[in-house]
Amino acid sequence: MTEPRDMKIKRLHMRSIRRGIKEMDLIFSDYATKHLPDLSDADLDLYDQLLSESDLVIYSWITGQKSAPEHYAQMMETVVAGAHGLTRPN
Image 1 (cartoon, rainbow, N blue to C red):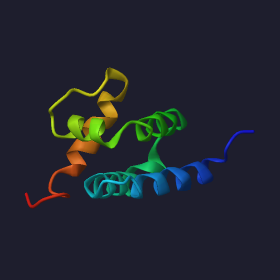
Image 2 (cartoon, one colour):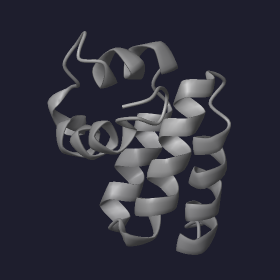
Image 3 (cartoon, rainbow, N blue to C red):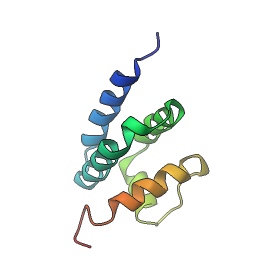
């Protein structure tokens, strides 16, 4: 059975705001609010995969300590752009 799009967006939004690390909660809740409704179904699937990654790994991509894998690169560019100033003053 396929998950209805509206339910998938709600589920992903909930996973975005309850990450476990406060900085990641802030970053992903902002991204989810601004972008989830406009993502394609394929990008929603990719975001679902991204949320399965470790917070510490994702945070290393956000801070530039490591490069995100190619399949996440475009999405992570948007996440990183939106993260500026969320976890500390600009």
